[in-house]
Picture: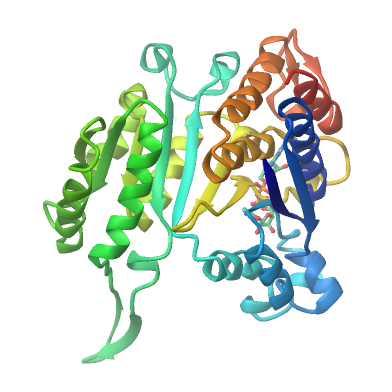
Length: 360
Ligand code: NAD
């Protein structure tokens, strides 16, 4: 298969971790006889330095012309960087919002998986962890409360703020279809999370999700109220496969789910549009405190590249191979500094990339 990948290394540890993910992709290409063609573009602080803006129209257009985007991270030391002495729409992170919007990435997928080798870092009790957990949070990314009309006004001398939560049935349907498609590639279970006992938008959400479910008789659908879901995530995380939810609930629940895995350097993510196109990036930021020191854990980015193989290129076997290689390296006791524990072998960013690539 021939694939055009736009890479956006970004700032801080971004270039180091994207380099390792490309190393692993190159190994996949060699073993499984694919051709991955890379084009690099600037975004974030490095783009501000070069062009005065965090994302140029040319960079966005190059991303649009590709089959998928692999992003490192953008941003610098917020309290101590020239990139932040400007209006918010000119700061590095504005590039991120602009590219998500420009590419119409409405579906955000964040897996939360507990490696048994890292179970000690999980803040939950052993009896709750049980055999571990393996879920994805599917969050709607471009609608709901964060994009609704808002204003602050003074009413009878009292300040009053209003935010509006709006979803139409098309926005709900397209994310639900994505969630059911992904569930088909996994354990065939969707838990749709809403607040249908209170909110109209949630009642519409439930109705549309139920209609979509009729096209997927092989996938089990359950509904869960968001407050219950927040509790269930820390009481019985093993019950979740695909969690489907709207923007704000997903924002909160995906952070909760990632916390219980115990390590930010391991968490991948994908944002997809209506076609197979997607942008793949680690869940963490640019970690300026450890940039350029060969200390960054590249696994989140490598696992994001595995998601790219699975969701944008339909290369499930190759994605499995990357995920298994990560698992093997951990089982063999190799660790970057952030996940180091007694008795393990500490390695740097580049060596971790080599070890994973060698095991494919
Ligand atoms: P961060 O995720 O960059 O770092 C938080 C902590 O985790 C730091 O101690 C860091 O060293 C560590 N860490 C993060 N990734 C790691 C990895 N792969 N390996 C080892 N340790 C790792 O969050 P922050 O410090 O709040 O933000 C730093 C910058 O990143 C800011 O400018 C912020 O705006 C930006 N940011 C960017 C994105 C993105 O590009 N998607 C996301 C979040 C934050």
